[in-house]
Length: 466
Image 1 (cartoon, one colour):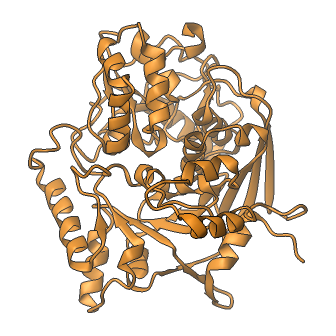
Image 2 (cartoon, rainbow, N blue to C red):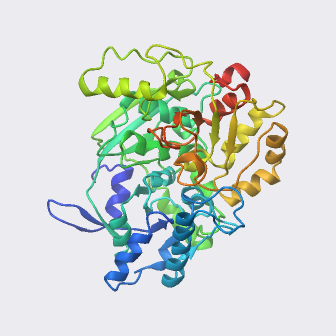
């Protein structure tokens, strides 16, 4: 029998039809939608006189363009209000489950899927959002799709998809104190570049990966898209099964036993072939920070910005343009530079473990006066847990306030925008020009690096305060 990768096993199990010399028709187990990329897809359905083919397999929540304060009040921004109202109307019309703004399960779609047990090993999962790759942490084949494909899935529960190539990234060894999965992600992207994964689906493997918690694995898979990959996947193990068990939509009783037996087969066979492989040592990874305008422009927090002398042509131009935008110089240190904003949240780092980590770090300390900090839980459940565990109180005592769930300053589609020229240490996933607000400057980092910056008011190695 041919040795198969984990990716191949899940992909092959979902191919309805293979088009010769073209894409495959792939069956989709779980479809997530939000208020930004779904309205046009529903308009497309109406125009063709179609209904949603399998409404029970689609789940919706507003997250991108919602306020993170006063969520019990009518939404002030007209565009945001219209998008949320449209999502509500479309879900009502087609019988789709919606967790609206004040529902106890509302939140960022990629946070609530795993929380509710909607995300399970061996599934195909899509959403009109590139960070759908998050769900790959469970051994699911999860990827973002465009609006026309959202319409395709609503109409047929299938999507046309060319099969990506396969890459394996192995990280072995033990992580240093103060180094977490966000650092692994930024380190990998800094090594292979922001386009190094283009055309591939990445499987993460190795002892450093299996040592990560489920939430840490979600952070890593979430960032797969930032090196250009179609998605990331990690083989499910005992941690995965324990995380899923007992959640709202997890299988129960006999169905659980049957599912578990299948899930245990979801791993790459000995001798299975990948199109490309990388191996890294966990001991080489420091707390990371980005200095440029794509996630590949990252370095250890104590390092100097590269001099760029080895770059040529357009790479050199991009490098220089990026540093000019950020107001940095080649060869200089970032450590010690003042920051204006700190953002903790998003589908990358808005889970309870992230908030615990941040709260633990700032406990007994106080926020720097020059820093505006936005701490945004990824869901209502995370918000409730933070309250119950006393994290909200710790944060308050240290001068921080928890906002309400949503994508917030990750993409500044709502009111949470970083002002022009200001520096933001952000736990989100993208540092493109203007990503957090017109002409804002974003430095991507882990919740620990963000906490150190929030306390000192400048870029600080968290290890120096631990």
